[in-house]
Image (cartoon, rainbow, N blue to C red; front, top):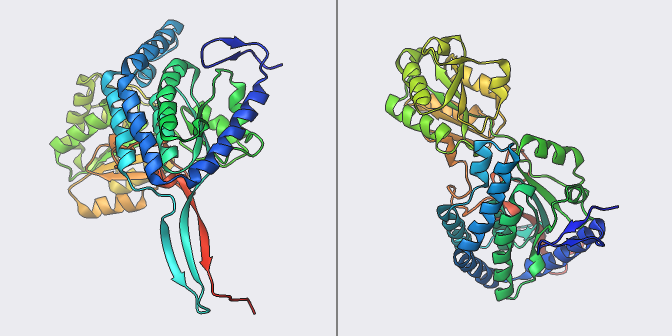
Length: 435
């Protein structure tokens, strides 16, 4: 028998069957997706404008709900500092949420765009045109702002979305979702276009992964390794994989030391709990005498634990010995692994062995080395002389992101509105038949 269902108003409905509720919820989302696929850009933008206003108007209510979530997480005794940081909303973060909606509203509508057109020798014209995916299921943990990001991006791209936030952010997501629904209502769009699963019951996740009778077209997981592993193991629908960010910064022998220090410090310590945070520092052996000790001391003095190989340990007594596991770890904390490598080839070899295909950076004045790194490192995002913390849809001009796709199919890197579309072919003839 299904567990009692906690509804949106916080009450417990002891008679509701979870499977029946989820199936009905998905059917409504599927019907909404058909409406959104044909909705004009102007109507979708009206909804987005109303959502932006609602987020700002209800900031105090969102913060109050978030405070309850944070208090509950702290009381559990299991939450790390990085987890609390991801969970916590502030006035600045709510304002950034609203600004992200404004940017999404301002980008070109991807639906209906003809990306290619050509004419065949028989006179037929063929067009490739962007179309929505349908119903997107987003399963995420801790970060409540994902509810807004995913909701508005799916709306802009003509998709309905089913949001299943983590139990830890249940109240925050509910408050944000109410603002999104208000925007849909004001624009005359179906409220089921952005649906929040109204229960903390983990069984709902399994039902989404099974596809809910074909209603869900794609799943996007946004969370830790255990969530992504479950999604990839159980999903019966396509998945935009958002794997862990074992990200590297490689400091080449030619690097400007001041630039390297600035980039490394920002990449690691700006926000340690985000997926774009650097987790491993690689330093060119040819430049180690100049740069290694200053980089290590800077990190430690900033409150970052450094775990290094023998050469790195020799620079400062405070460096701890790195284990083999450290090269494969996403800390999401003020910890970094550090290693000396033999030039750009050594850096690429290390990243190929230990990286997660997320985000990697080179700091170098040598254009040839930078070109080699950018060409050969097989990650969704590669940067030259810039911090890995730019791995973010907002920083790419997308307004928001639904995640960083680290796979190789359909979408890669920040998944914005355009990446949430597929395509179909439109063929125009004048009576042609095939001989």
